[in-house]
Image (cartoon, rainbow, N blue to C red; front, side, top):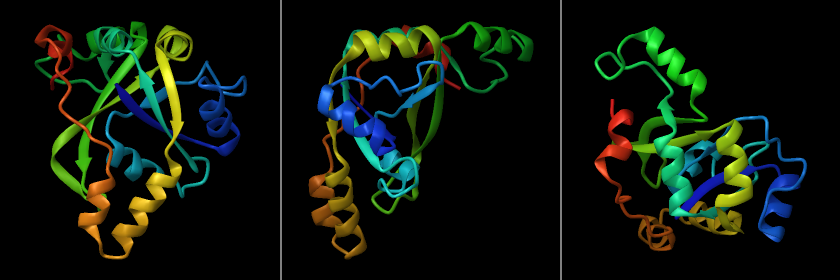
Length: 181
């Protein structure tokens, strides 16, 4: 499956060229992966925000993605889903991955009435992501800029025709049950 990230050119360029993150990529920081291209465009400003100029499409294994979901915790406390705030904090401390559900975005990067998953990876999850789950990395910055140019030129149909194909991810209920607010 494809997830998106945006980095400085010093990280994004070598990652796309070599198919893995370079040594300067910080394994000790949480890294957020986004299965939604348009949500990534919202986050990185079409690759124009400082430090996020290189947009990457990272192909990862389904097994890795589902491992992260199974070993994740919501990034915020939800009454009724968690026993109490203290139990959620304990779960958050021991989970190597975090999930946020943020509004999906349209071509103009406006929020849509449904949510898209953002998955934060730290510790063991970040190491597995970098060392085991990645199948390939592609620099999609030119595509992001082309789509953005068409949106700015008032050609949304042409822009939409270039968007990467995305479908709902089929996953067993037990994988997501602990992540549904």
